[in-house]
Image 1: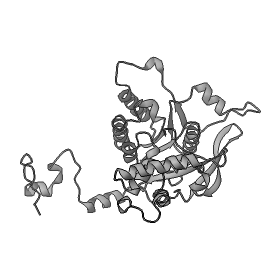
Image 2: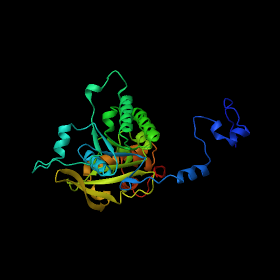
Image 3: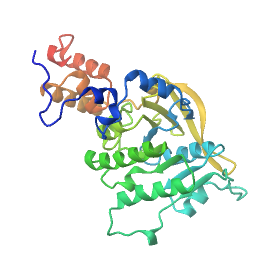
Image 4: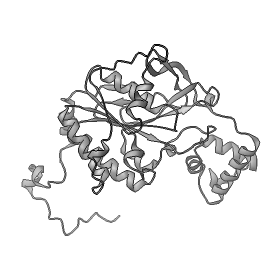
Length: 337
């Protein structure tokens, strides 16, 4: 086995540098693993901001298709947090009138009263310099406002508005690097709302449903989604897809089922209970099942594994296996496993 040979451009470390890691390199913060956990243990553990999904000082993503209710849930989460601390809700979706109508009692005309620490921010078109880098300007101004208002919790609705090319991995990646730098610099908690391309209600929600999926998914500390129930149009379900803070509680076997309802002047998600995601998926008709099988066979012929096929088509590995068994019988080609 060849030994690792350091680049000749990097000078060897001397004994003084080993004793004083700060003198080695200014680019990295260098600590032993023991010092790392000892110092981190002296700081308080992050508190949950929303269920066991989003925690303090973390970047979280909520994605869903249009008209499923992600903005409604985003405002609800922000309003609850604002009872204890300042929350900045960057609303790039609704006009002030649309927002007002959403939080007005349809019978009495009474307006909902939000916590005083809940601030809604929208773009001032007259204040935009279109000759500058728009995405860079957004991040810079978000930082300026957060510092001025001593706010640690930011909700961004939504990613697509900030980055028109969010479905392209490189553009989304550049934007997320800026957001992550902002988060780490000021210990911010950031919730980003994002769209998903139109998806089939027959398939379970996966990370591939997030526009710009792979690069975006990797940046976030936690990711969850809202699904539309194909069995009951009045229901939605919340599914966790990623967590760096522990166990994923709301997985496909335990999605949180809710309905959207107007309680007085407040439009909100109301918890119904827990079920499997499968209960909310639409059954494929014969033509759809045939088309899916053809896609599975085509991908298998390219040499892809069942796991890779499942990820690309947004279905479970067991579903791929069942389709292949149906086509080939029990003698499934070995290379497909």
